[in-house]
Picture 1 (tube, helix red, strand yellow):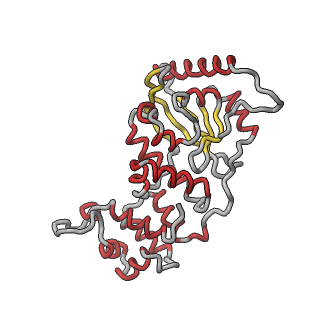
Picture 2: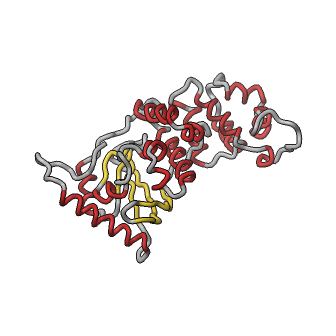
Picture 3: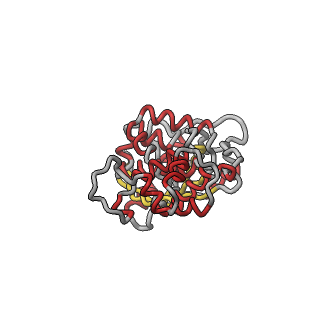
Length: 290
């Protein structure tokens, strides 16, 4: 995932997404690029074309915050994308702490015994690190519950489970950009991006857009083979004690068919756990570790 000029890749991808009309520029002339030209971004940002070209080519190593802010406005970057721009242009501010891949026993116990709703813990590569019984049951149609992106793009169940697959795909890829940004040298993130880029043209196309948006909450239409269609609300919480980890919790509006579906999922999860042979050893958590 790490490239020699990731800042330039980001800037080129983002200016391709801004039309002259969006930028308030005339668009009647013939154009060889689908978005803004370099000189147009420079004009909008109030810098010289030569300076912006050097910035995009990776030859300008010390842009000021004022220049970066002006470029962000010229490219119509929202707050997450602008934060990503600053992180790429000022690499000294990148986080040095490696992500934690082990879920604490306390968090596992919280999910298992105090959260009746489906709950999971994911890492910055969107790997499932742990899940409570209801969380495992929610994703039980998939061949493996290992990585959100692999399940979405490579498992055929993904297009059935996510009722609005295109929206889910865009959101998940932009979320990966946001979650992975503090860990530019993490080998697991590079492995996931590399595998999906080779095996899924849909992922490769979305990854090349450089959309950056953390998904902290959303409403998701889902379909499960045992309970049917559900409209679930998704909340993502930062695990403060474990860098890179996020706790995902799925809920439904009380009194709706979706709420009834969650009750049925929990019953199915309890039945599956009862039928499962007892685990050997002491201190084993009921959470699933990827």
